[in-house]
Amino acid sequence: MRPTREFDITIIGAGPAGAALALTLAPRHRVMMVDRVAEPGRRIGESLIPAARRLLRDMRILDAHEACGHPAYLGNHSHWGEGRAQTTDFLRDPDGSGWHLNRAAFERFLRSAAAHRGAGIMAPARMVELDRSSVGWDLSIRSKDEEIRFHSRLLVDATGRAATVAKRLGAGRENIDRLASHWLAGHVDHPDRGHPGFSIVESAADGWWYSAPLASGERVLAFHTDADIVASIPRDAAGFLDRARRLRNIGRILGEAGFSPTRRVSTTAANSARLSRVAGDGWLAIGDAALSFDPIASRGLFNALYTAWSGAMACHDALTGRQPDFQAYAEDLETVWAVYLRHLSVVYGAETRWPGEPFWGRRRLA
Image (tube, rainbow, N blue to C red; front, top):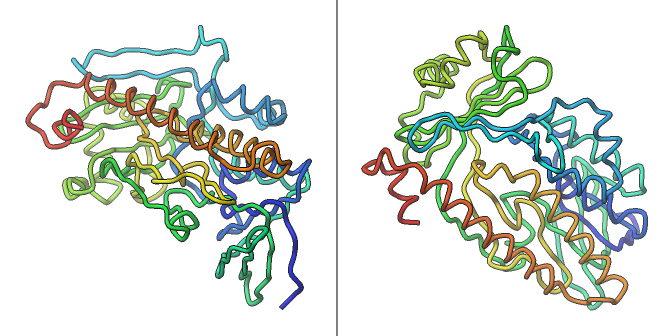
């Protein structure tokens, strides 16, 4: 076994939240990221709202991000409530437009920016041992066939919804609902006919649908419903697409665009959830590990960047002795969570057409 390596912050997880925290702290502290995958894979969660510009600017990566050429996210077409189309555009948003991202490319960009600023990364690798010491954390990290010892003053959980570090340290996961996202991506023959730059949301009796343009002329199609209702959803691409084409609005877009699936239907958790504790003695959680948002809020990636920025400030203050604990960070996330729940209640409360359906009834009760 190699001699113990010393770091100020070890981040378990190098997704958007972990990499954003690393690139923020790396110029002033010794930072190491550990992630179980060597390269980011394809995932749903491609919309980044205009307010993220402020965070990217504060992180000093906005210009480099815009140079990547991600398509503009101009707003949303919503078919909700009474079913009439409503459009929210970003033309009058002071931050301008957002982005419909190539998600894997965005994650690679953040990792690269962190490495350029001096952060280390071990991937693929996983944490196999964790012990609290009087001055930090002792970790064993397994990479391929070797095991490496780390000593780190602070520890950050950026493992997503799994929250593996926080759970290991005794934090519980509080799930508010059982929402799951079923999605596929495909090529479109006529991308200019599918409301380019806009996401489309359409409610149905058993959940709600979403579609948005992606890079390279592709489009993502997703259906969101509770896990126990999933049996009614076709798992093959042809059946899933056939179901979507019956929709009044998204169905028309898919038909006009000539949608051709390029992969099978994937399923991922999309429920609202949070940790019982987002921080403790010498550790904190960021991104989906701390707070997980319903995709209807369009705040998933923004939350990853925001908690990374807020968490980075908290880590810096702890390392420099300005604020030894993470109480202010925990209070900040408590406020974020309360505002999110109020927003979610308003959104779901606006749909009243199916009062007897389980999906909508549960959200009225919530």
